[in-house]
Image (cartoon, rainbow, N blue to C red; front, side, top):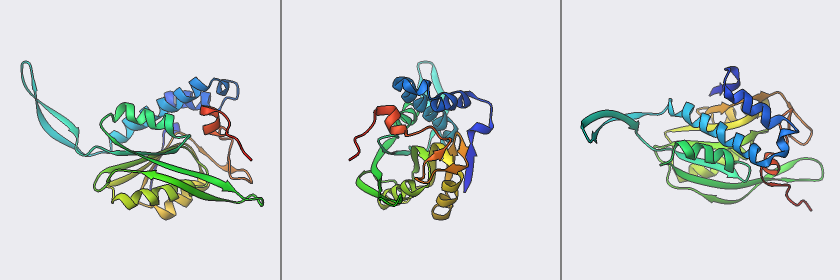
Amino acid sequence: MAIIDLSKQSSLVNQYITELRDVDIQADRLRFRKNLERIGEIFAYEISKKMDFADIDVETPMGIAQSRVIAAQPVIATILRAGIPLHQGFLNFFDQADNAFVSAYRRHRKDGTFEIKMDHVSCPRIDNRPLIVCDPMLATGKSMTTSINSLKAFGDPSHLHIAVVIASAEAIDNVNRTHPDATIWTAAIDEELTARSYIVPGLGDAGDLAYGKKYRD
């Protein structure tokens, strides 16, 4: 597995991550969503460098120009609901891509453990196409691996890219065991998890910060 941590470079990613983590700036939901979108755009640009391109001739008003375009448009998948702003960032750049959506969430038990529940998967055929699965947080890797397994029922991608804003070291190890051929793209790696498997220092609940707190019975 290849792990590409963009926080190791000095770039605007570090600024956006700082703002996403800041408890005062987080109060601005619009800014929070926009920063996720911006990071998605940066991920998209970086991932595009790893894709296959094809040479084509394009007609201009003055003649024929040689150019290079993506050989196979990717399928961009996200896990609802927190992944929507990040997904939009990818779609801003891969504007001809097909899209997939997975509804997966944690169902917590009284003893503090949880299981992954999946309600819905919408996906095109992904055979021989790059598959990009994006989600803001990779805490344990359980939601990610469950979602990827459901997506692979729609075909065998040419390559699997996993794009997450913040990952835990434990989750990276877990994903590596189930999908060793994937490339993980992240903007930060945190070492700790709480007893309820939330990333520390992390940034909190990305879905709640982007869209408001959900009702919990």
